[in-house]
Amino acid sequence: MALIDIPTAVHALVSFFALGGTAAAKELAEKLLTNVSMKVADFWKLKDELLQMQDVAEQIRAFQKNPQHPDLQAQLPALLTQKLEQHPSFQQNVEVHGDITANNGSVAVGANKGDIRIKNNFK
Image (tube, rainbow, N blue to C red):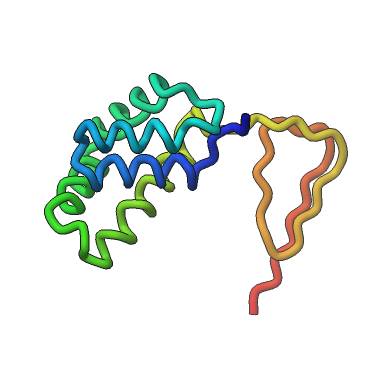
């Protein structure tokens, strides 16, 4: 069983909200979670936490009023992805031993024993 990733979680959440939180929405979300290690109860808790965020709740209401609107179809998954990237459930604490070098990019490290060098060449 794989761990749930952010795209899978976003897909399940958008599907749930698109169906208006109905029994069919709940059943679909549970089916999407069958092959991941996140428990369904944890998913519902995550959904409730997201609904407590004003910007998320407003975006969901707008999406549910006009689910065919292309901007709303893009905005809701983008907002949910952003929130999940910041959520503690999706944070990975990686311990790195040694040096890290990133050319033209950035690096996020939970714990590091060594040097971190970032070289960005902007054109």
